[in-house]
Amino acid sequence: MSEKAEPKGIFAAKRLSAHNRAEMREIFDRAIKLAERDKLRLKVPHEAKPVQKYRGMHYHYRPELFLQLQGRTDFQFPKESFSLNPDELCVIPAGVPHGEVVYPENGTPFRNLVAGFYNNTLSLHFAYEARPNHPDIEVIEFFDAPNLDVFLTLANSLAHTFQSQGPARESVIKGLLIALIGLFRNIVETGTGQLNSDIGKVFHAKCIVREQFANPELGVQNIAEHLGCSADYLSHLFHTETKERLTHYIQRIRIEGAILALETTSLNVSEIAYAAGFADPAYFARIFKQHKGMPPQEYRAQIDAHRKQIELQPKTVFYDRLDFTHGKPKVALVPDRPASAPHDAVALSRAGVVSGNKG
Image 1 (spheres, helix red, strand yellow):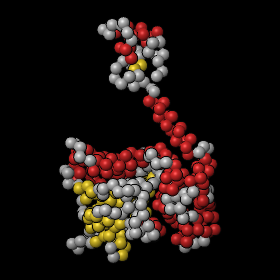
Image 2 (tube, helix red, strand yellow):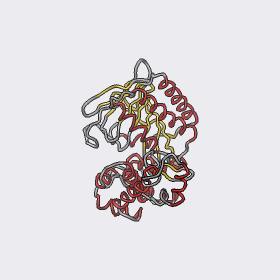
Image 3 (cartoon, helix red, strand yellow):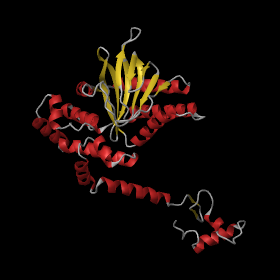
Image 4 (cartoon, helix red, strand yellow):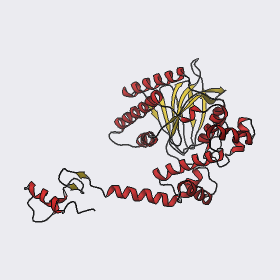
């Protein structure tokens, strides 16, 4: 799918029905069993220079997963290509450009299950062959995922481990696959999303923003054109149903994406600004400060300071003392104290020798 073709599926896509959910649960149950028997094959493209534009390809700022159900998907990457067949799963790392061409095979139509990650939200959708060799979204659901970082860590770890040559590589891949697919299975069973409670054009507008927030050209006018209505009408409808202006919603989703990047990546502020859909890093900094009350550099500094505070906390808490070392009680470092006398440790603790050490 090209970047321009991608939103059309969002406009036309329906939400998962009860039947779709049941089918998705069965698919994940089967994938778990295949992974347990080492029958689910994993494919991951080699890391290329990320976020580069190539004709006929697109990329995402978070990983994307494809589970092939029927037919075949031929993936193209800047320096390689491979096919994805039934009972194979592909993890495309964040920022890796790729293109897709799909085919029916052996009399069965193309179909796959795709997982995408957004801001505190993940999407699951079935894809079908909308026109010859071109996939599109059949049905889609957005799930609230406050533990999104867990999904992302598992997906990123899968991609990294696949390219590694560690002695326990196959066992690690198997465990990560089962854990990640299990989390998808659980969220299909129990998950809901605020996005799914919206109807009509408001639902589609929110889908577009979450899919396209990294596009600097995304705006109310652009969204309204795709939805076949005027910008004024869409703005009024969105505000009436959500009590939030669409322009503010776009900014908020972009800032949420930037916050996640500040917390979890080493990208500099300018790179994060561009990744969040801001053409001007200085303007991004102003908008960020309006939302968070501080510039992005200060926000990241506070995160780093908080992490350092956690590191200064005791490593182990005993009933009678605190241990600030990595596995060796602090009292054992005090000179001229016999280590064999446990009452000495209690006395030192009460005297403040241990508890007084805040380092």
